[in-house]
Length: 250
Image: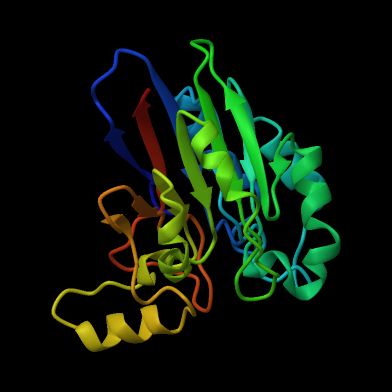
């Protein structure tokens, strides 16, 4: 695995207090990306001293072909967060028998697993942060939980694996939507847009929003994490594995 980049995003810089949320996504554990590679990711996350860690889906690439639950749990347990670790479902967390194991793996690793649920974090400064975690949009069954909860929080974050679904949730006026799934196209070769587009378009529901920050409207921003692992081919070209760090002033 090549080096992991850390992309920092600063939001609402009017206050002296802040919440640090670290996002990682799309690990795609497989024979050529094992717990040893995951250990490097865990260390990078812990270096950020996160308040909250969120995982936006796709733990294994194909559970039926390769899995190592004990060692993966052992690594994920090492992730440290001041308040909580939160996970949602991706499409790969359903296939190859992963559906029967994913939630158990993440809960044993200390994560709160959300499926169409609201979850609150209260900070040391008594700020109430809402995390809404949705089911996977391809193989799951998305159902929006009580959206009135948005108005009870100081800041609200929606977690959804596939980024192109974000347009469906604009009306709810979340402050921030966090997504993954795209791998940033996984292949980004300058001056060869046709190859790049094929790489991106092979990933369903990740063609409109591929990587980085987007402003959906005056109220809502969305960040698409380009992920850690690989699928289809075990290589990235021009898309470095990423951990996203959000410094949210409250």
